[in-house]
Amino acid sequence: MSLPDTLTLEVVTPERAVVKESVAEVLLPGREGYLGILPGHTPLLTELSTGALTYRQGSQTRRLAVSGGFAEVLPDRVIVLADCAERAEEIDVARAGTALATAEKQRAAAAGTDWEAAQQAVNRARTRLEVAGPAHGSEGRAAH
Image (tube, rainbow, N blue to C red):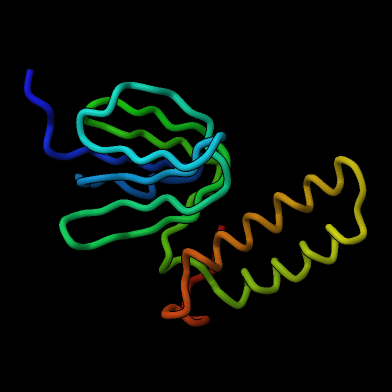
C-alpha cells in the first residue's frame, strides 16, 4: 500500500465550514502540545487546545486561530471539529487587542475557576493576534 502525497484538511465549527483543502502538512495544537501531521500519519484522535493551526500547500503556509474541539487524523485526511476557528484575514486585530486587555484585567482580579476561564480568554486573544500577524493591521473583518 503506497502512502498518500497529500492530506485533505477539513476545519469546521458549529457555525460553518472554515477550510476544506488539499495540503502537504498540518501543525495543530493538541491537548498535550503541537502535533505535526504529514500524509500517511498513523490514525489518532486528539482534543484541541487553543492555538494556531498551520497548514502548507506547496510553498504557501496559512494559519488559523483555533480553540477547543477535537481533531481526527487519518493517513489521508485531517478533520478538525473546533469550537471556534478563524482564518488570519478574518481576525479584527483591534478587537482582539481590546479582548486581550479586558481578559488580562479579568485574570488579574480573578481567583480559582474564574482565573482559569480568564486565562483561557487571554490565550484565545493572544492566539488571534499571533495568527493575524502585523501585516494584517486592523483591516481584518469582525470575528465570531
